[in-house]
Image 1 (tube, rainbow, N blue to C red):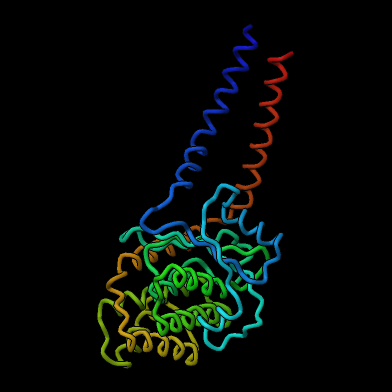
Image 2: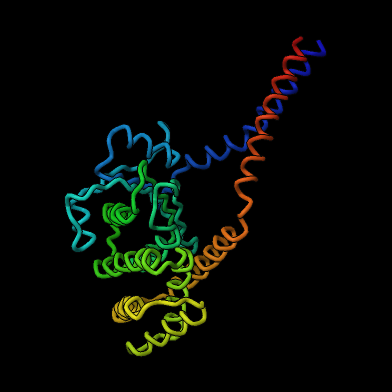
Length: 306
């Protein structure tokens, strides 16, 4: 009898441990009646098996309610000027709209497969394009640069009836290209590039430059304050990019809080990278402890039954 009671208590503890996860699933199933279901846009090149893999990566199961669309080569040339309609598109995205003031959050759920673009690069480009107050999850079953995920995000807003400004999308596309090019060609850490872009935007919102010369001054000041060395050609890329933003009169004051939040996220990421030299050992220790705990658990069950 004592053994039976012990087993029941042990099982109760296991069930209670599952309750938070079940509660999280219930929260996930809740539908926002104002914005509707989350929208998932798949890359056209995905096979049926890869599509299932992406669904799993995005946390979807048979009971997940979403609207589903496919980003095609036609969409690619529609939203990103100069692209090849025959390009292979694997990047996929889930967009969940949020209330005003909740900010923009981008999660790359397969960071090992998105090789060039970081979540902060996506956030910066999307804020430029006019995307605010949303959670965006990006996934790919294979290694890709990640640029085409923007196409799926733009399409999600298009099909939902909230069309983004075409010219702002073009500048956002250019911003993402400049960001990844600086990270690759100049040898600057990706998060440092994102921090630079974010800080320049914040300064533009603060100063409201009226001329290209004033934009150039802001760019030079931020390069100096962040101790970033660029070639004259790369400096000009930045100046030309932010001059386009100035001429479009993009009001970054409206997203000042989201830019501040993005700065904090980038700083946290950089700090984690710097402090994470012992990460491999921590992972090893964790799994060693986990395996030992599982062995002890089944040993306890055996002793109770024996």
